[in-house]
Image: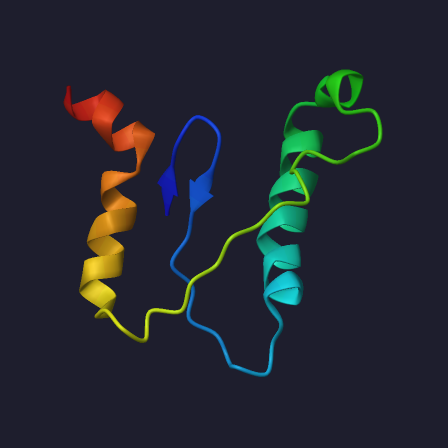
Length: 85
């Protein structure tokens, strides 16, 4: 996982029979649920309970190897840059 100011990068392996929308429902739903339970005041800013935007982007890694993708995602991680600078 790599976290930037306005997006999150994930490397996920899944069965090809699962749709991208269905796949992303799980981390988006679980993290929203956890955030709202951890910090109830989030409801004041997000009254309808939608923390994440409906947007998504995905890419198959068929034309690059997995380690290249993992390295890319690691370099996007804002938390890592903040800690090492």
